Image (cartoon, rainbow, N blue to C red; front, side, top):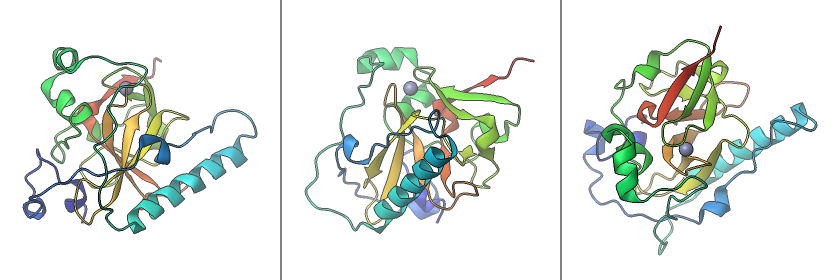
Length: 208
Ligand SMILES: [Zn+2]
């Protein structure tokens, strides 16, 4: 299940080989984008509300059958934007494949799977802070996993690229680079599992 949920063009897991025809169908980004506002205001309540909304979104997308006749995904042009040629020059090949082509790295291929220091995981495309090390946990999947993202750091979009396996794509809010997917089988306190590609991230250790 886990391998199948991460089928990709780069990942030749046996469970993925049946996924021959991929159709790209999705709703507009805005339809699923969350207004993650866990930071200020009434703190705990807002965070709890945001988590509940995220959990509902993940569960809701998973329950949606495939939809016919959708458009191509919205272009990945966020606040930070470059031409495709520029992105190819700016990024290492593995980061470009994930961030700009939404591919999935092979399990356990990223050294960030075993990164246990305190610090911040930032976007490999634009440097935006995305995940605090405190929210990282060992999921056993072979991909860096987190139970929560930093407030407003990520945007979510339904992903129907694998037939009969609706998922929720996680993008960097600032550059809209593909980071991975979020599932509802994570640990407390959110119950979410942000399953990220390490190639899309950089780690900045906390200065001591
Ligand atoms: Zn970014």
